[in-house]
Length: 133
Image (cartoon, rainbow, N blue to C red; front, side, top):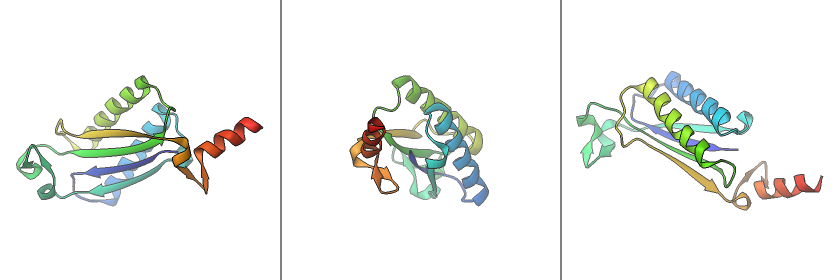
């Protein structure tokens, strides 16, 4: 049940959004073993004049950038899984939008199971209910 929000320094397009959402969904289900049907992705576009790296607008640089913020339930992935995920996501986004600034970030937030959920039930509730069966 991950939620992914990606900010991209690229020209906005429905096709690009769909491609990025599909790649992120594929990698999240494959590498982090999350349920595809519960993987939500939002894509936001940031103008080059509004994105700065090292205090310099990215518009003045010959690269693009992105920032991925992903939220997963705490303790559901190993360090190795997360490291591979970060590496593969970076490579996939670079293949889609071109040369990336090294300061393109992927942040995996691990949220306590009792602090989030879907369909009106927390992940903790689902876990406890599953143990009772």
